[in-house]
Length: 171
Image 1 (cartoon, rainbow, N blue to C red):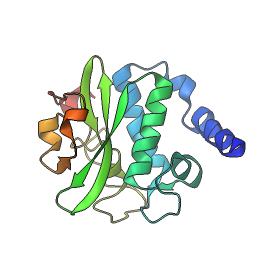
Image 2 (cartoon, one colour):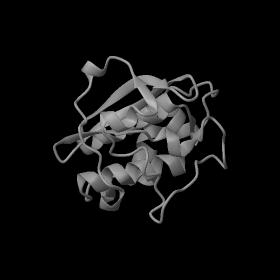
Image 3 (tube, rainbow, N blue to C red):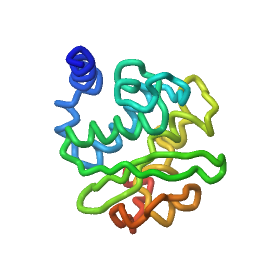
Image 4 (cartoon, helix red, strand yellow):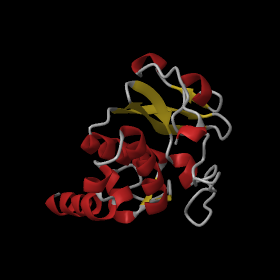
């Protein structure tokens, strides 16, 4: 266990560069985390450890749950409130997991998985890049109403109200 913790800590401090990330605004920290996780880790739901932060930080192959758990882990280190959300990707009829993050006093849905995989198909380990800023505007800083267009949320009452979507231009 200590070796695993050491390996994860090494990635967080050297590769993720948490000391630098802490100098950014909350919104920038969330965007940085989104970009970093999708560039660092390939989507792979079949990996033996795909539901762990170990699969993200050490093996660099993980499922939606592993990516969401890793995002929560990083947000916790950054002092950003984050919860795991469990639900269903409606179009593909599969179980799914993502995050709710609290940024500048407002809660938003945050799904790092979508940029890591397109409906389970691997494209060089990463999803398509959309827009000049390299972000897919459809799965970051979303309201519950907006994310519910493609996902079903289990036990909606357990999560913070996400009543606002940030426009793409703001990040």
